[in-house]
Image 1 (cartoon, rainbow, N blue to C red):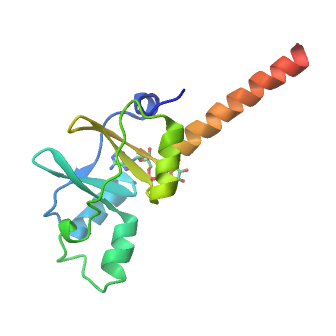
Image 2 (cartoon, helix red, strand yellow):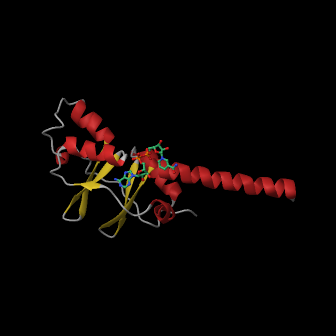
Image 3 (spheres, rainbow, N blue to C red):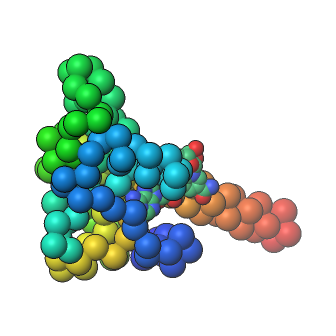
Length: 143
Ligand SMILES: NC(=O)c1ccc[n+]([C@@H]2O[C@H](COP(=O)([O-])OP(=O)(O)OC[C@H]3O[C@@H](n4cnc5c(N)ncnc54)[C@H](O)[C@@H]3O)[C@@H](O)[C@H]2O)c1
């Protein structure tokens, strides 16, 4: 069974984060610089939210707020969906689908130890399925 830790071993445990007071415009610049769609929001080394492109679109642009004077804490998602290193990738996929989230912070106790995104999970599932198909083809054609 493939678990979150298998993804983290490949992509690394680093995570990009901002602070609740960070202005939305600066968060967006950081997201663009790192080429990611979400940033963790940390306060005193504790995860307190996540700020995503969706938060920006729906809670800033659509509500007519300004990214220049809106701190992330006003528009971040605080109701967090998190996983552990031991969580299976199938469970991640179910969580992402049911809860409508694309990024899952990985926690060990209170501590953040990484982030997995929908792309990480889907590409890993596709790879596993490709391997399975190859094994089955070998079994069928080579006996
Ligand atoms: N080929 C691959 O293995 C692979 C893996 C992930 C994403 N992608 C592609 O990238 C595009 C967008 O990906 P996405 O929708 O999954 O989201 P995304 O653009 O936010 O994520 C891209 C990568 O950055 C990482 N990431 C995102 N936010 C992070 C953060 N705050 N801290 C540390 N790492 C962070 C993700 O885990 C993922 O590996 C898609 O086109 C997807 O297919 C490809």
